[in-house]
Image (cartoon, rainbow, N blue to C red; front, side):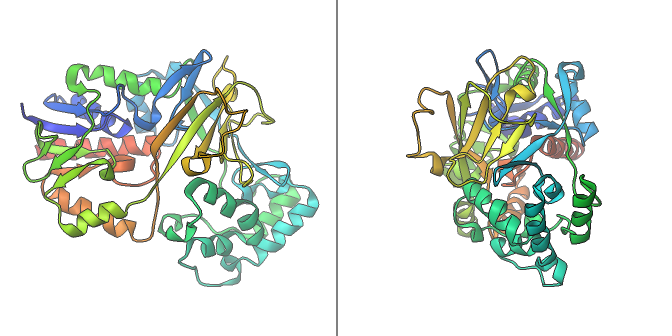
Length: 406
């Protein structure tokens, strides 16, 4: 039976779109989901009596009040705690606030001088043109000390060794690192000037983040089909799996996860094949670490397999333990006795990579599909490293557009 709208994927993007359409009185829709429950990368499970987010660290940012108001209609604000984000970086034996360039004052004085001298010589402070290669950009933006102590090893751990396959287009809005402002912050022993500060976020009081998305899915009733991976897409006939027909299809799943997409040009098919991603393993540990109250900690040390830890007991009352996030390629073959018996989850599609040429590929793909009433939405539908609050905003905006066009 054909529907007006078919939504592929019941992660934050698909759920927010479906729920937004429902709020507008549109009920002629169907959501299909590959997993046995909703939430996508934001799913949670109960481990040691508390929630654990199986897709890594996900939190609700406070910066989009319209989005929060929408989400609180499914899980009221009284069920959330609000925190000031406290994230740290473990560098050279020091636990320093994030971002590193705003917190150099927390290092011993001899380290501060090294970083200040390096920032003073950085290309963005000496008038050199902005380079196009990612590694060159890191040196140009932050200086050689931050590049070599933190940014390069950390990004290799998270995204892989071939960093120069990444573009710099996604970094253009980041402010330059001012030598004078950094020097003053070291003198005043606090962040100074235009350096970015810590954000605030919401996290459920009693559950993992996945509870929100389960409630949204429940509100859709029998309009969701679980254990139904989208394997084929016919663009011209607007049919998924040869079974689910619709006037409009909204895809939130990874384009590369389809075994077949009919109606695409060879250029667009090859473009999809060229899209890159990184996969992660999330592993739970029962215990504590030297965290100084931080909710999560970044680890650039290449000797450690994981690139960050989420300190659960610092943002979920009554919880214990913490979980690590590790690039799957690094995790393979690096299991230790400490890892044996721990609870772990593999996420094949974790982070879309911002490779050179990706924007042009996605612009052509999404532009072509839109003319046939097929849309891409969210982290994977648009192949962009979006956080869940932005994904919800994009879904709400698309719902407004679809409502006006019907």
